Image (cartoon, rainbow, N blue to C red; front, side, top):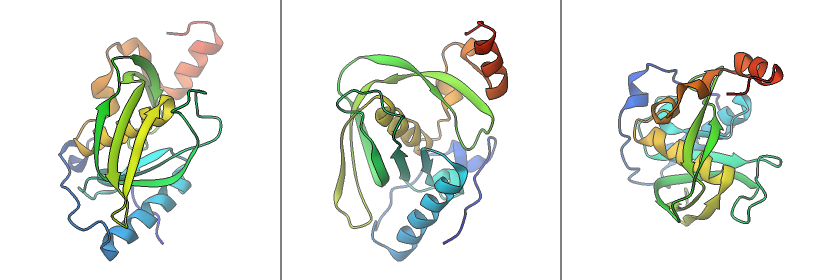
Length: 180
C-alpha cells in the first residue's frame, strides 16, 4: 500500500465533476481504495474522496469514529467504508450548522448548513449495494465527500464567513468567550 498525495486547495482536480466508476471490482479500483484508506489513517481524517488524491472518479472512503456521533439513531459508528458512484437524497428538510474541516484545506474550519438526515446509496468494490439512512455526523461526512465528487469544497457552502477561519484562531475565540 501507499500513502497518496492529497490535492490542496487550488488544484484543478478539486473543481471538476468526477467521472463514474465503470468497474468497481477492477484491480486498480481496489488498490485505489486500499491506498485511500491508508492515506485516511495517516492523515487522521473522517473521509477522503478520489479527487482529493488526484483521481477524478466518483468514489470516496469514510468512517465514523466513536465519539463523533450525535446519539441520533441514524448517526452510528461506521468502520472503514467505500461508496462508489454515490447518490444522496434528503430524508426531510432539517438542516443544521456543522463544523467542517478538509484534508485539502489544512488548518481551516467552517460552519456549513447540512441536511441532518439523508439516504445514500452506491456500491462497494464487490458491486454490492451500500448506504442507507444516515444522520448527524454520518450524514455530514457523506455529504461533504459527495460534494468533492461534484467539484464543491465546503467553503463554497458557507453562508456566514464569521464562522470560517484557522483552527487556532477559532479555538482562541471560543476560549476567550467570543464564540462566533
